[in-house]
Amino acid sequence: MTTSAELDIILAAAAAASRPWAGTTAGQRAVALRAVADALDAAAATLVPIAQDETHLPTGRLNSELARTTFQLRLHADEIETGRPFDPRIDHADPHWGMGPRPDLRRIQRPLGPVVVFAASNFPFAFSVAGGDTSSALAAGCPVVVKAHPGHPKLSEATGRVVRTALDATNGPAGLFAVIYGEEAGRSAILDSRIAAAAFTGSIAGGRALFDLAVSRPVPIPFFGELGSTNPVFVTRAAAAHRAEAIAREFVGSYTLGAGQFCTKPGLLFVPSDSDIPRLLAGPEAQGSYLAQPLLNSRIQLGFQRSLARLREHPDVRPLVTTPDGPDAEPGPVLLTTSITTVLSDPDTLLEECFGPAALVVTYEEERQLLDVAERLPGQLTTTVIGEADDPLAPALIEVASERAGRVLWNQWPTGVSVTYAQQHGGPYPATTAPASTSVGTAAIGRFLRPVAYQGVPRALLPPLLRDSADSA
Image 1: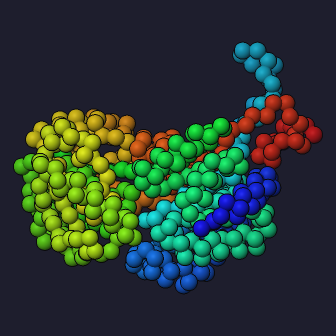
Image 2: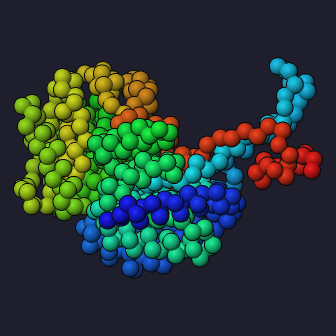
Image 3: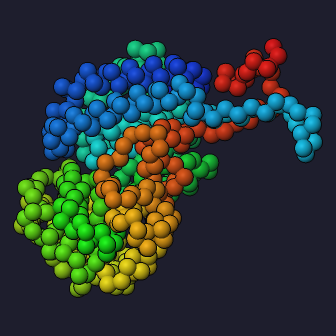
């Protein structure tokens, strides 16, 4: 565990590194990000076995996740070289401006300062020590202090070593990056005045506790927390009639992917009560060859068992697909079912996230009921509509889904979050604490920047991106 004395040294070094790192050019930071990506790729043969040992995830999944991690580092490097994340805007002085003479004004996004990143458990590479939060904060020009997840401490240490070595080799300032360990160290870091922002991926309870700390400070700081989501899927009557077998098979593939330990797992499936989908879901064709497998760690398995028990104990919830389980058993897929009227009468219990290979199939009588439940849903990372192009309910359902979720999918499944320019991985609370932001994609860089306008400042004193050829020396 990181002691308070060690933490003080780390935070002092991060604060000292803040101005030098912010003062580097985007090109210099891009070189550093690519160096980290190259170093991680080179260390794959060392890192992946450690990750497999600590998380129980298969080698193929871990290799692809590491590739995703290095891809996003390089994508962030490419993006900052364009200058787009810093959004430079120049208004030259104009004595004839419509509301009166306008001064010379130049606006740009600048780094916030040191960021504490709370690593996630379910993506030991892509949302952990060198994951998207770390990459986007470094790209923005902010030093990073990562609070390691207790689910993979050895991997965190090994990855941290790779990142530090790569940054040192590109002449990054001392204190630019560090890893800390222990709940108390993380709590102390978020309360420390030298930390300017925080990012988190994890549970609602843990994220809300940290969010409350972040805003309780004498000077509150931005807290970008991804917390929880059930990611509902609405199947229209027409789609259920035309594609029942495919819908059942694809849904099982999505909710069991990664043993149901993705934040975008579809945990709610709404289908017509007279469709074949519930019957097909219970059959061997839909379930395929899915085998029980260990969850990431014992703490997550215990949380899964508790959430599942609350659903099973509900008097109006019935089993649809069950597998043998127990305190030490590797969880297999579980499907429960209930009616939409039951969900509407007890949303607090039935709309709760169950993190693991389980989902709730909800049957409805009238399609208009989908709008009723969609409007009752809390904030979501994703909402999916499985429908036909001429479904009369589709426009209204997509509109409500857009109000409740950060990503709306049409005839696709939510697991799989592409790292790209237009991606939105966020949503209204409790999906996240900052619905205007994303933690995936190039727009993630903007979380760790704030706008500053310069008025009448001489060209030589302006940030380079705000200088143009019309300026006089």
